[in-house]
Image (cartoon, rainbow, N blue to C red; front, side, top):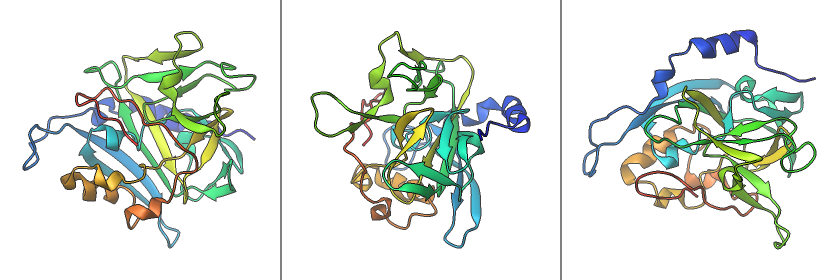
Length: 257
């Protein structure tokens, strides 16, 4: 059975104030050289006692933060034990089918909205149906700047996670900059894994080994607070596969784990 977005959820999305997630001017953080743009992020997470916690957080609009929320566009079908479910209809506690360990409970889902055509923001990537083989993907798949796909190179022994935007060829995989806001999502499980989205193997969220050494000190506590199921950086565990860094269009040119 295929679960698709409800009419109500689609209507709510159309009525949403798409400006809420636009980066807004913020006061300079103490000891920072430049003002930091802020963005609104929404989180739904599963506590250890089984309760679901929903929160709305204002945090820096930097690549390290945005990568946690910008993998899948609204409408992306994620394979669960119930069948394919639209990413916006996932709820903490649902069992997501991983390609490494079978079903795993969804612990965290984050979302934000981006306007890619605004202020030269990060672009989206559309993979046309069957672009990477029959049923890969099963239908057009739109991803954000935080998405990686499990890629098997003929010259490599092991598969590696590669940023989806690196596959852009202008034909079957194209760059998009929609004029209106686009809602994007990412999800996290107990352990990093690959899952199936529209027939493609994509990764769940992991900030990358040693991320705590890269984040500015003043942002570390704010970042960790976004993940109520995580007590310390080591709780994210190890990566399921080697992966390449995300390319960013930020002014400092930094890449994210």
